[in-house]
Amino acid sequence: MPIQCKVLALVSLIISATISPNFAAELAWVRVSSDGKGFVQVESELPFIPWGFNYDHEGDGRLLEDYWDKDWATVESAFREMKQLGANVVRIHLQFGKFMESPTQSRQPSLDQLQRLTKLAEQTGLYIDLTGLGCYHKQDVPTWYNELSESERWAAQATFWEAVAKTCSKSPAIFCYDLMNEPVVPGGDKKRDDWLGPSLGGKHFVQFIALERKGRNRSDVARDWIRTLTTAIRKHDKRHLITVGLVHWSLDRPGMTSGFVPEKIAENLDFIAMHIYPEQGKIDEAIETVKGFAAVGIPVVIEETFVLKCGAEELGKFIDRSREHVTGWIGFYWGSTPEEIRPAKTLPEAFMLSWLELFQKKSSQILGPSESFLNNGVTAHRGNSGEFPENTLPAFQGGIDVGADWIELDIRRTKDGQLVVIHDETTKRVGDKNLIVSNSTYAELAAVDVAANFRLRTGKTQKECPSQKMPLLKDVLLLVKKQTRTQVSIQPKMDCVTETVKLIKSIKAERWVGFNEGNLGYMAQVKHLAPNIQVFWDRGKDTNIDEDIRIARQYGFESLVLNSEGVTPEKTAKIKAAGMEVGAWTVNDTAMMKRMLNAGVERIYTDHPRSLLSLKAKRLQNENEK
Image (cartoon, rainbow, N blue to C red; front, side, top):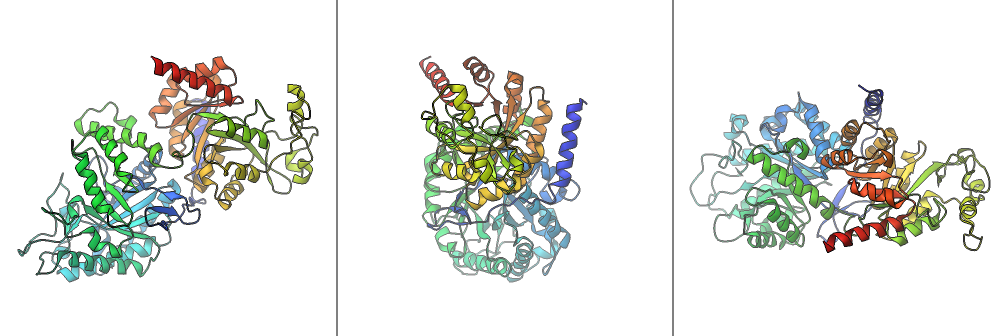
């Protein structure tokens, strides 16, 4: 193993051992928005759009509880992979028989593993849609459970949910409790002899909450069952959202129905979770079904969808058209990434690959802030530092004005604990005085004209380039927050990540920021403290790209940014295949910009964002004219 690879592996091990146990990811709590149409993060009021996967089993068909004791590494890997693919939610399906010893006694070891799972979710930055009462493998359903009467069965289910809610009540990683996957109230007057619906691929996803109707209104039965379980949950958890996963044939329309008519059972639910698999050539019909669920007037999440009955192109159109009516989408992930599947050798692999590629493509459209922020792959290095003094407010405003989608800056801590924007350890290179930043107070540093060197190099007059003081990071963040086109990437030049993240959260600037730096410890710490903030991990010219990709995926970094001298088409292809953005630093001449773009680089750090934007515009025009 090359020495660089050994060092990276050692650093990775140290980070995992020292940071992970001590820095649980501070996920924001989620609630229904004030207008009742979607979800928001509690403190920041930023929109939250559920976008993720059902992780109901691994590729070999094993359910989670079948392997989470002896093969926890598989679970950890799957969570990291789902996060890296762009998910913010994972739907977990808990099996009743694995959690209940008797009608009144839960299994503590299973609850302990569930708590371990919530900690993993917090560390990974994923929210959990926690679906319970599963009986997917008929052979695992306790005999005593099948022999219970309806009222006894409901009481046992309430005990299950009390135990789960008590275990999970304090974790912000729980997005919601889903009472049961696809419950049904029997129709007609004939008594059933089985609580489970027909199997699909050896699994029973549909479950009946009663064996006979006994002359009751089906919606009344469904509503009473929901009330029983929500009351049990609220004994221990009054905060997390509650829903139930409904089959698409739950609407009160002619034909087969579930008895769970949305408008009649919604009063005790926080939102509606619907399951729908659009059919080829019937997207209009699927949208009409979605409208029926949305008519209830509370948020709707499509909790299950997939390329089961239509191709990826049609499913993509369905998702686009459904955005007017729903506020979240959850597909499937069974333990294999797109790069692990390619090339697909079987039809199921081809289906899954097409879905995962669609999911990655749609992620940037579904999840904010990309709907309002620019996305042109131009990072203004230390601001528009070719036209203004680097790391100053005019440079940052210049980067915004020219239309770069990101500006980049460097930060250090002063003697009196202020976070200031400057690259070097001293003010010598940029200013008219030579002060050591960490040994000086901000009042002392503010007296330095950090535009002095720029004025000298460019031959500008004092009037053309007025004096500038070193900005506080807070001042730059407040400047950036005034608009929604450009974001800011922060490069910590010393150990100050904790206070930086604290500042960002205190002024609710998470939406506007990212971090970039080559120090793995700093970037890993960002992901543990604020998992939803983007990380651009800087790499050197001769870096081991395969090892970099492995580590970046481990920590959930969104981008690898290479020293431009080390960029090759082979490296960029590998990074893209791993589902990450590929960037290059720092590129200031047009010929090198062209070489980077031709090599497949998606993001370029430059002192001259205006030139790069112009070059990219001309290339796009030429491509359109072909």
